[in-house]
Length: 475
Image 1 (cartoon, rainbow, N blue to C red):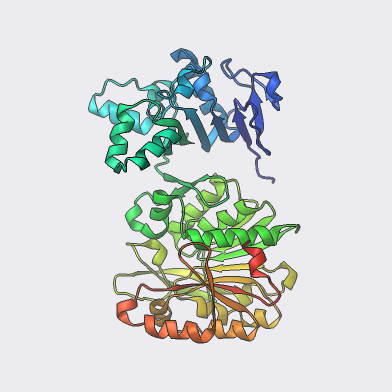
Image 2: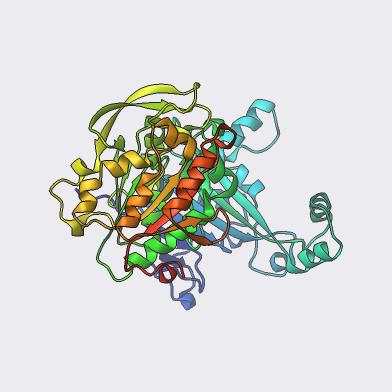
């Protein structure tokens, strides 16, 4: 059965049209895909038929009276599916761009949207606040995920010239008009009252922002969920290089296969699928709590047709193995007990030799991403026969000495890749810097960093097969 296709609506599009979106405006002059007056309800779309909405400098021009505005918000809620992403950009009401526009009739700020967020309404109700509970009275729920304010260019130059502190900037924003030019708000539509999930806005380089579910308690997953929630990204340098390579390798192909082992909550699988529409991702994640969010993020971003999930681990064996769970940082869970506080659970395990059995080389992944907390060597041992058959993917891996040592392993896979004429690069944590390294340098790093005082140090590697022009891939 084919997956249901949802609409993406660009409402009040004006002259700003987006490919792959239904561009909607009431003015025929703008040549919209569909001419609709959004102040007239009901809207011409079915219930739960929309996954994404953009209201770019348009919502502030609708619903001058409260009844019309709440009708618009109710219609927006009706047509959106549970988990839909609503992206709003609006002129700030204290800026001349808003004041001087005769058609601007409604202030739209993050404060405005709080009135349509049931969580915030419940807090107001509990505290006895006098705020009008529009989310509760109209039975809509737009949960605020992220917002930011764009400062006016003149105000920014003045702040720099006068060397204002952050506190000075904040105070002067409150004091003066024309300090903020616009506000940008990201909402998620919540229709399941039992959904207590936490969401963040992912903002990777050179890819439009999108929503991700993260662990509700960020203290349990500081490494991945915490980073995405705080900064919109995880491992930005590695992610940018990964995205560039995926996009370049996918260009001109009918299909590009990618494998991500240690998918956590889905950062790299979703990133790969977002990079190009002909990318298909197989991913492995052994931790049930992560796998649940991985599935959620695939669904949120409508990628179920291109991302498949195996809830298990990869190593050099088949069967059931112990996964040692780090409840202080779930992304650091591993198949070896590298510290005492880890709690074991049983998870299924497979080897690449078995996974790829009977498959033609042309159907195997061309990009192989590993984030497996020291299990790299074991996985390569379980893939030896596949490499002997001629498999030569671009490989992203890590050398985490303290965790490799917990497996009784060393990074011997690097020397093996060298024998297969791979070029090895160390990926800088900042920028797009790649440093050519060899297996001797990697082993020296391992021997130094395996010492207890260096237990948290690791090296991120990009391993490129013979004949691949790395400069062209990351240009």
